[in-house]
Length: 102
Image 1 (cartoon, rainbow, N blue to C red):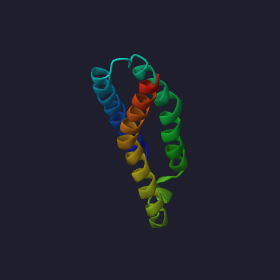
Image 2: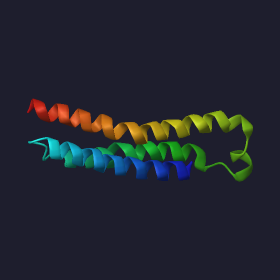
Image 3: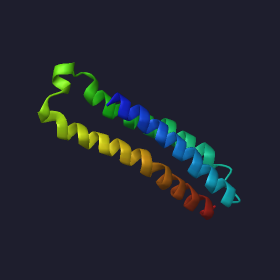
């Protein structure tokens, strides 16, 4: 799970930077957008991913290979990857919507 979380954070960060920069180039009053994206990254995403990692870090090698835990591990991996890929787009769309209101 540690590898999944680490790679997920790399993908999230890369997508967040790319998507945010695209939004800044298109928008006019998006000066707060990068700052808000960074705050969300630090304040919400890293602790969220750490929670998934903590669920699995206490297992020794024998317990980690237990077939009964396979579906739970796959579920957590899918959630991490869905958040890694989906959140940058969702957050940027949300910030763009808020910035158009003000």
